[in-house]
Amino acid sequence: MQIIIRADIPGYFSIQVPYDRAIIAAIKSLPLWAWAPQKAAWIVPESSTTITKFLEAVWKTGRFTAPEQPSDSTFDIPPMHMEHPSPKPGFLSTTKDSAISPEKASASALGLAPPHPIQESQKGTRLQSRTFQIHASAPSVSPLMQEYVEALAARHYSKRTLQAYRQWLDRFLGAYPSRHPRSLGGAEINEFLSRLAVEGKVASSTQNQALAAILFFFRTILRNPVDDFSEVIRAKKPKRLPVVMSRREVKQLISELEGDKRLAAAMMYGTGLRLQECLELRVQDVDFEMNEVLVRNGKGGKDRITMLPASLKPDLIQHLKLVKAIHEQDLADGFGQVPVPNAIDRKYPNAVKDWAWQWIFPQERRWKNAQTGQQGRYHMDPSIMQRAVSEAKLRAGITKRISCHTFRHSFATHLLEGGYDIRTVQELLGHSDVKTTMIYTHVLNRGPSGVISPADVMF
Image (cartoon, rainbow, N blue to C red; front, side, top):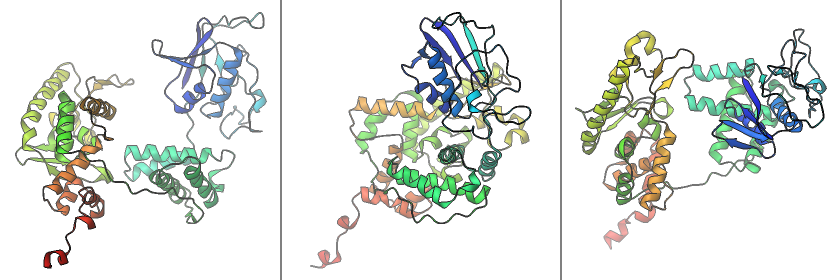
């Protein structure tokens, strides 16, 4: 990881950093920070105090380790003062594995070395350096965390679940920085989860996700079956009904979209697909002869089959012709690769360029592997579709809280309104339990208030 700080704007420092939430949070802890898009850098007031505060905040992230032999010509900044009497394990180490005291943890300890020596003749004189860099080792991953990630991957947890679990474990261990994970137990878990509910005011599903991530760590990695959660203050789980659009609203909203975004929205409504499932569709997943759409690796790692609306077939065929033309041009340019699951690329090396494996909704620009130089296309980013639906809702004048997932809710509700049985809808949605599908009967008002008593018929 490398942080570049330049004194290239009168009165300001520009800081260029790779995307890292902890480092960006350190920048935002400084006074009068700002983002400069034209320079792709963060702007902060130029002063040694600002740099000292920034280094202190960066130091506490634990992302940096000291060089084995710090240079003597490093930028002289006042020593940093740490809140803890001793550094965290792994923060600083020398060739002799001896810890460096926080009082000596200055810019030189972080390896802050300019390309040319910096001289500051008088106090308050503007820095003569134009550019200097903070070099740091890659973020250190503890063996336990590495084992945790590998255990999740070995059990085929999805990428998004893996990221969420790791973030929750980071937050939990970060709440007790001076203690080893093996010294933690049920009391600390109770305290952490209760704090989420009371201070963080998180939803019950968020609290349960955090609990699942922490329990996986204790049971699988530490092999410590912690079961006492009697003192946890649970976030109250509200019973909310899904937002459903009427048929007129669906038609109005889709009409406000254009191009592939309009087709993707129509696919989500016509098939009941989730947003990610729709964007991850490949050419071979659509069977025009059988009027079926195969959803691979859906939520929970399950496959399922849903219908292909006949009204969408002409538009989808025309769309695929355009996508194929783009793919053929990419192949002519020496590219045309897409990521494929598991080890298919090793078993079938040409699969990455095969038309059948191409995305139905590819991104507009090719991605590039910075290491190998290879280029290819990924599917449309979910945020692009989400933004398009949000803007279309405003143009349509719809006041409901609508998202891409609302198409799925509307799909299920309208099927039940059409008289289809709930088990059929369950299969199309891919729900494991019919109780999950039954929530749409409440939307239809087919609960107790929608049932006609036999006495009403008799008398």
